[in-house]
Image (cartoon, rainbow, N blue to C red; front, top):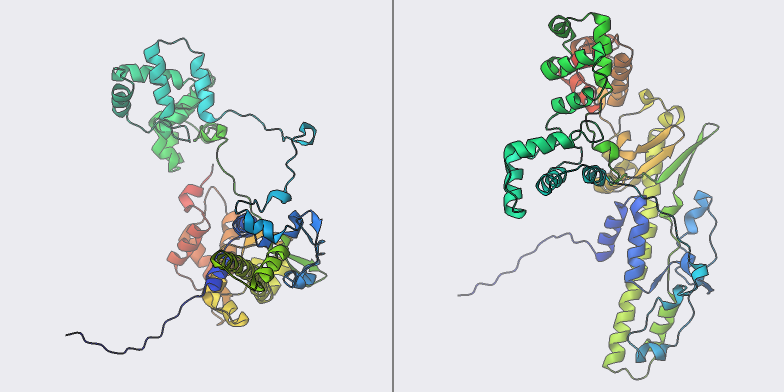
Length: 491
């Protein structure tokens, strides 16, 4: 028997506009331009006046930049594409909406090409060197297999037996392990030095053996790398002096010789690695003790709804007779117009939220932005800013995790201004950034021959009124990527 019953539920659902705003809010400035271009390509009812060629009156959605007076930016002249006939739109469904926005001239004189620098990649350079070596067909195939098996840092981590199996199954080339090892020695003689090494020890040894072997310092360095590398990496210099028979001055020269070597020879000639460019979302300037906040102009694009699409919709809506095709056209145009309006509203809301959040952070950390002294940074968590601006913590988190601010003393991720509170002996709450700054200063001024251990750093902080455990000091040191005292030791 079917049982039916009523049930009340309280659910929280996000509207399409809210979802679009959330996605836009977490997009950094460097990616916002790409996101806007994608929307412009997907929605012909959305226009960017800076890309237009013909003048057109401004409509009611051209107020996107009304609040840009705060950023000292001037509005650009509005422009649009040529008007087109509505009847032509209905008759030809394949009309190119973007045809009038670009210059399709075939005149060779109008074409401008940007010169491109031609560079060889790391693997291409090795292949070119392999081509110059007189080899049999079998050895040449083995050499190509070794080069193709190298990692980006130049190391050969693939087992020799695996390469032999690959050559047998994919190339139908039968070789022995000695054949591969012989070709490996040939490739290890290529530039850059240390290439095709199977571990760090072999990499350093290959580089040293390309140097002047009559130099006693180089020979001592080879001895240390090939027989005492573990003591060297652990900085057990006393053991090295006894094992190799060196005095402190000679050991200092040998260590300097080893430190000049490249532990990742492949990276030095790698041109395919992407480098991320940071574009600040905000700018803070100091005008005689008064901080001025401005938003990057890329966050305030001049978008508007297409006048042509609005006229088209009015024409369809006022039509006396509406057949099926016309109703579908009306629905399509209305959908694109609504989507354009939502996107423009989301951009405006993103702009306002960014300013509101950064303004609250700037005033909360006013003394820090004035002096650039990390000891003036106040303890601040996401809830502090969320309460000030009346928004949810998740909104502040989305802004802080992906946005940067440029100041007169550097460019920083907003997340770096948030820190936990630490209570001093006087009961005063200070930021853990202040403690990290003190630790950094102490380690920076220490005697590198006798670096300060974590216990000693803990005692120094307690003398200054910061009652912190040794494990907390170790945690802060690791967060700042500072090694332990033994690894900071220098000769």
